[in-house]
Image (cartoon, rainbow over all chains, first blue to last red; front, side, top):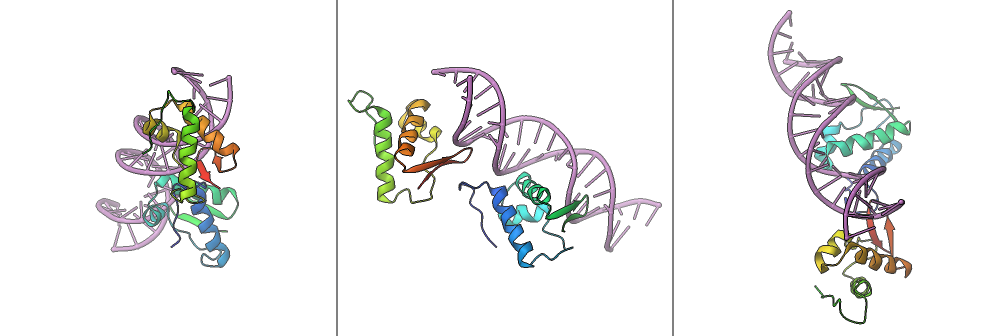
Length: 76
Length: 76
DNA sequence: TTTCATTTGTCCGTATGTATT
DNA sequence: AAATACATACGGACAAATGAA
């Protein structure tokens, strides 16, 4: 579990997005699989839900994942 | 916590810059770490925010630190 | 069918930090 | 020196839909 640095020059939400992206590219999260939920990210990295949401939104904007309401976010 | 002399020949912003520089060179603020924020300097030395900003600007001009908008100032 | 937990969607307010004027 | 704007982050609350029990 990679750790994030809230005092570093890179905002936490970008650090989290980078971690997820690395796991997608490594195959840890295969195409079609679901990435961690917002709540799981909150528990894993001890960040606010807004931060987790922003990380997911960034991945979505990059076309890496798609979010299904009430279901989760899945790797494209 | 070194004190600042507002009546001395050396302007407060230079005194502060010197203090920070000494801490960088001593390793108290390692490379990549964040130095105190403007507000922290204001609280620590009871100076105006302008003074803190000027001290940081001086360190930046000397190439000792880099400021990342919305994140802070970091030791190079 | 009803109940329940899960998950995302959408607000609110507060705090911090820098940028600008 | 003061006010304003913007970005980031936290915490909380409630709604809505889904799917499982």
